[in-house]
Image 1 (cartoon, one colour):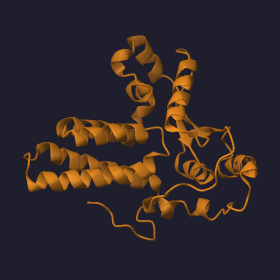
Image 2 (tube, rainbow, N blue to C red):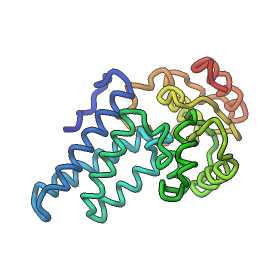
Image 3 (cartoon, rainbow, N blue to C red):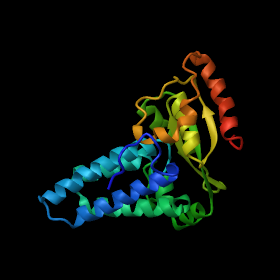
Image 4 (cartoon, rainbow, N blue to C red):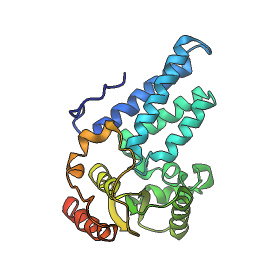
Length: 243
């Protein structure tokens, strides 16, 4: 069942929260795939799955995997009542997340750019499994189409024999960038492309107990021109290992 919202943190850290919610979604969608169509139990499980997906959206926006792109696919499966396919996708995603095996799975590393395992040759699959995985944070208040174009451009620049494989995380504000740095330890590089606005739009209550360090840094009085350099300095303070 879903945890009730509390002022104090109901989980030890954001990693524990993510795994718990994905496991709850795995259970709910698994039960949904087995229940009778049109039953009251089906309606209850659909509502619970929708709520879990909504809650997870407030967390996954800070990660390349599973990320918002995959949550959108799951929401579409739920809306089409493809309950068996939904349950299978959630189960596979949860397993990849819990085991960290997505780092070497080309199906997940490439899927955001529109590829699947079937699009890759055996050699490409083998090479992907040997690469070191990390994520790059881009900070810019861009549109969704610009974000997709950025990810495609980065994907087009990749070479098959590169030693590394990396996912792209885009954050649109100063506060969101700090949250991503606190949450996501796969981020190993940050690109601040242009002056970001300060405030995040609609930080969900679910994550607020885990981001107090970021929220205490009140830079709302600083001009947007100053925020980029300030963010660069804070990146080094929060995560000195980051490029």
